[in-house]
Length: 322
Image (cartoon, rainbow, N blue to C red):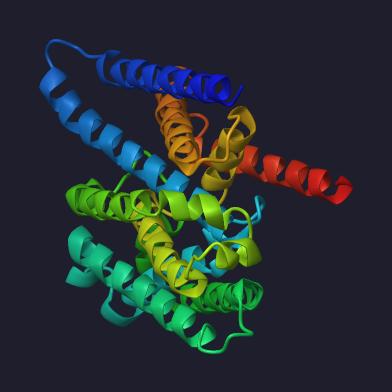
């Protein structure tokens, strides 16, 4: 029976991979004209790669984070990482100006932002795990408080910044799939592959961590060390997806839970692959519909956040009844 379930999961993943390939080809070739196909491909191919990287990063970060916290309704956004991204962008514009190299150069801006987010993650996790009684619950509570603080600080800076520079800052605060930061695509891809390799080496450990903290410790997992390491990897993945398209709060929540519901297993080698494929399919397919069917009338980021928000409410109602 177990082998049959695994076979069904593998068939589902193969179908998702086929759908991703079909939608990707449609996104590339539909609407191409013989006179402008070179220019169109120069825009579409980087966007497609950016959506693939963003979707995979959002899925991997959320599935891993939910396993570490043993909670299906949490996302890395609860740690304040998205709010920290907005605060760092606001500080860069306020301190250096919208025309400075720190803001205008996408690669340097991405490096500054990711360095800030990683420094925050490392300091926070190491500080909170110095004492044994400080666990994930305390970490999440501090993350919520710091996220509110970061959001308030960013709002204050946006109030005092020059109105002309605020327009530049506004583009960084909102998720946009029409104005992706493809200048950092190669760097984001390297970070994504590195993070995926680290997670791939911990797949068996993640399967054990899904049983809970006490069971993982009893089975010989060095719990605190593994959690700290994987939390830093989650911060890297969040910075990758956020740096490419901007903050996306509910994408990871939506695809991670859809993968958990559709699969018949808790093995992370299947969950991560399915969640990543669903995420990429949602982004590429949604962007294709937004461009070719709705003529940019409905931004895909708004639809994703709307669907994710409604799904989050349903999860809360489901958990309250359990």
